Image 1 (cartoon, rainbow, N blue to C red):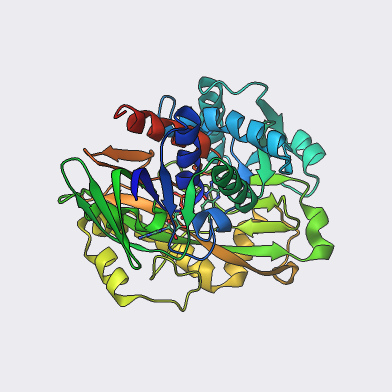
Image 2 (cartoon, rainbow, N blue to C red):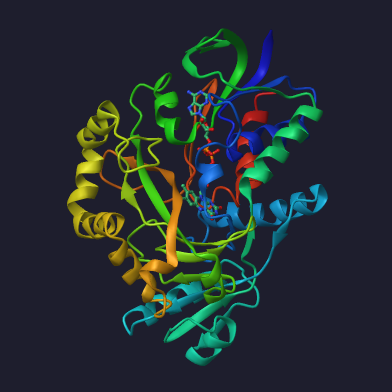
Length: 398
Ligand SMILES: Cc1cc2nc3c(=O)[nH]c(=O)nc-3n(C[C@H](O)[C@H](O)[C@H](O)COP(=O)(O)OP(=O)(O)OC[C@H]3O[C@@H](n4cnc5c(N)ncnc54)[C@H](O)[C@@H]3O)c2cc1C
């Protein structure tokens, strides 16, 4: 069988890319290859479930443009397919004097990104929206919403199958041999010929890219995000979504409270180095993967720069009391025994050799392979826009 396109990875980005391709050019013969026995088992199935508005991202960046565009496409898709979602809005809260100018910068950024009806709110107004939150001032972002991304990805899969796209589960891609016109994708079971490969392998996107790119300048560093859940009788403490002001030097948003579309309220995620790419528990270690991370020159520079933040995150990971203390900045009355374990997700964060955590989405184009090498948050919100961007690059070939 000769395919037009093989997409590696059945997470939300790979599936959205296949959707946009088949929509633009129904004659394409497309295969999605996923190593797990289900779609969306990794980042997509273990995230916070927030439909991001686009307030955080540098104006003009791929994150900003794809988030705004993807937001609208996602909502349209959910409406058409009957996937439950809610645009409940969120508050971002400054809890110290030092955070006030950062909050103001965020407000300006949101306006630059074209967000309508953003509101700066006072301590009293924060209380009207979230009665248990203590903040000096805040921003109300009306566009933010919640959805279950696992459901969204599964629905992408259903639509794809109806349109003739093949999805093969339980097939890990182990090699890619790029030829002059045909490329061979080798899996643990068989091999396939294709005109183009699109790598959307998330936590392994750099590994898959290295099958054809010799001197790839990025490595995926896995950062685990651990959650607690509020006990049922404490869920009243959170109405919707409550976020702190993020550290502008760090690519993560800080522990927040999220009412989940599938029910319950989560608190988290923190950001600790995972000792295994798909390591959802502290005890899971893959020595080869850990050694590779530690040996990467870029990681060593990141560690030297952010060791203090990293140690703090690690401490909060081991100490529930310290995690609770971080949450008390937002909701002072929350107590350690209001929280139960809530699982974890692992973020695929690209880090370049020079020591930068790559901030923007990163899509690298070769002759027969397109590698999506950095698709962290808000890539779930943005998936249909990223898919459109990638399929635009792909379709130039036909
Ligand atoms: C803790 C956490 C919270 C987040 N919160 C949000 C949020 O609230 N809102 C938001 O918009 N975004 C959020 N994100 C980001 C978002 O979830 C990810 O950016 C998005 O899911 C990335 O999708 P993906 O398809 O690239 O990766 P994945 O979902 O990880 O999919 C990649 C797939 O590739 C497969 N694969 C890997 N290697 C191979 C191989 N060799 N052969 C075959 N298959 C392979 C994997 O099994 C996997 O299924 C969060 C992420 C995390 C981890």
